[in-house]
Amino acid sequence: MRRYTVTLFLLAPVALAMAAAPCWGEIYKWVDETGQTHYADSIRGVPEKYRGQTETKHFRPQQRSTVRSMTNGARQTATPAGHGGSGALKKFEVPYKAYQGTARRIIIPVRFNGSVTAPMILDTGAPEMLITPELAAKIGLFDKDNGKLLTQSGGVGGTVPSIRTIVDSIQVGGARTEFVPTTVAPFSSGPFEGLVGMDFVANYSVTIDTRKHVVVFQELEPRANMPAGHDRAWWVINFRNFASMRSNWKGYYDKISKEYDNTSRMKKILNLAKSQYKQSDILFRKLEDYASRNSVPMHWRKY
Image (cartoon, rainbow, N blue to C red; front, side, top):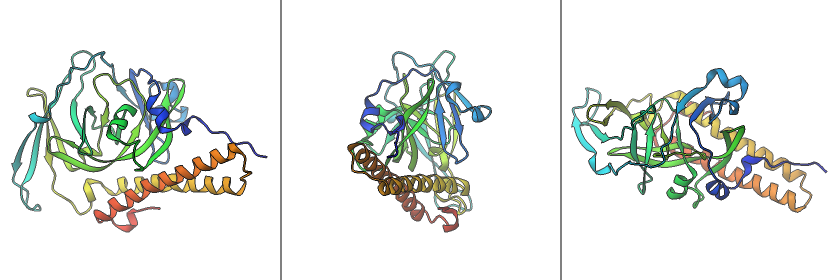
């Protein structure tokens, strides 16, 4: 009988949400050959072949958060659209909190799925969003069958369990976007609960006014070659990633099914493979639906 090993990344979402988070002072970010983004809090957690490609973010958490509710302070104005637009393009000014010390951060209030508001770092150098398990639980990502794929991210001395999912919508002041690929990973966040990156600002130009302490989001005119504000590369990479995850779990499930021996251990592995294939299929179908709603060309949807 063959032996199968269930690694750390197969930890259940509930256990992940309850796990003690390591204290991160720096986050190392890299992208593997499939286009998947990974995070580590130590250079030791980065595979050697990617160490020359990492981006380093310096996070020095504070013990207390002094972030005040800033949602009501957001201001909205309108500017005339260009010749190719229809109607006025909106502009939103959102107050941010700037922290003193070596870590100067832009922390803004972000509203998730129209229900939960949390302080997040605005990082235009990050391609996607990263949130804590605690925030994911508050949003309800663990409560509904909305697509949560177990994976792993770099951690102290190795890897830590994480979850790949999609947040339906996020909003900062009046600026809003849908379908945000997200990684849920444990880290000590201090005064913030994650970081929001380029997926959010796809439809806006961003200006930071350090004198007024506001972030200005200026709406961009829609362009036919950038459905939902994303270029061809974004769509191709995401379709490739989500299709690959689904295909891999389907293949693993089929393999286990053929060699199933009715032991309790094999039952657990088979159920896990079946569950993860279902979750990866949910994520892929969400991407397909989002692409269809935004008229993404079929040849961009690389399966």
